[in-house]
Length: 465
Image (cartoon, rainbow, N blue to C red; front, side, top):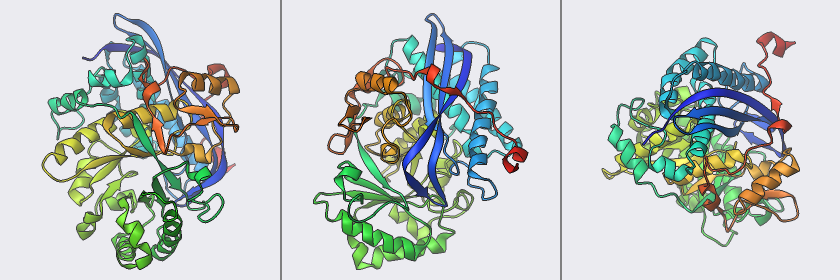
């Protein structure tokens, strides 16, 4: 049963994050980027005032990959998305359910951002981060943990944004969820990452005992196949069963190029082992081409969309084109993830298999990884891309006392093995037990005094200066 709330304040902060090693995906290499923190204050009907929080990296050149924009300009687009969303949310002054607030603002958010040349995927970032913080505050005010709260639909999620579903589809799905006690990590191998030897994909110090691997693709079928042969040879030395997924981040120009890659996977003897372990291929073509290109015979390989998931109707549209899955990412919206998981369950009941995956490297230690992990565990994501810890050294620039507070509150998720407090991985899994405390998967908030206010977006002229 939903509980009504009224927003009192929304504040944004950021903290620099420097990578321990460069991460290259598609056409971009990231060495550093800020992490966003959101703090909201709400009044809950009959319960008083509560504060909630969320966090996420401000990732350049993912939400908006237009070549004419610099990485810094795309980060500023996310900052503008946040500011626009704050204005829309705070303009809603009455008591309402959390999903009412989201549903009443998301259309205006997309439209307003479009007028400011911000694409839909980036436009959704602002509401996504605010919604997580609101939910955290709501759960704290009612002394409820995320899993129980979502079972009871505390946010009041309904089908108004997904007319292909009925309200009962969503409430039944929510009520029937049993959160996973652990989620396997899927170790990402970026395009510049070491393949062989020390620090390579088979090095246990690097892959943390993972049995799932996510391999980035460049969009060049010959180069990608040659690199996959090298990676396959390394993974076959692990001495354990493993599974792989491939992610092109929109780099395959068209269906012909994609056919060329699949042909190599099907025919090259050196790729036979990897091909037999391939679960799915993620977002091969640019989002605009994806929307108008049926997969045809390729659909049998099991493709999912990620960057093309920029609206509530993206999954049904992708299904009609032959896609079987869609990614869940907190940075794209937790309510959309839940709606899509309900769709996958409903569609799969007729015999065909549809699924939701966990694809998010932006989840750094602390709030971000905990909230996204809880979301995945709730909707049934058994393995997730989860090695932000691989590219960032533990808690990074987080003050030691803040990192220690997270480790003390969530001892199954963090440990210090002599290199500082880091994500603790148990035989390739992350445990979810400590995420059952009141609030959205966290017993701790960041040290707000150690954060700086969100930087104001620059104009195009300032970027060019």
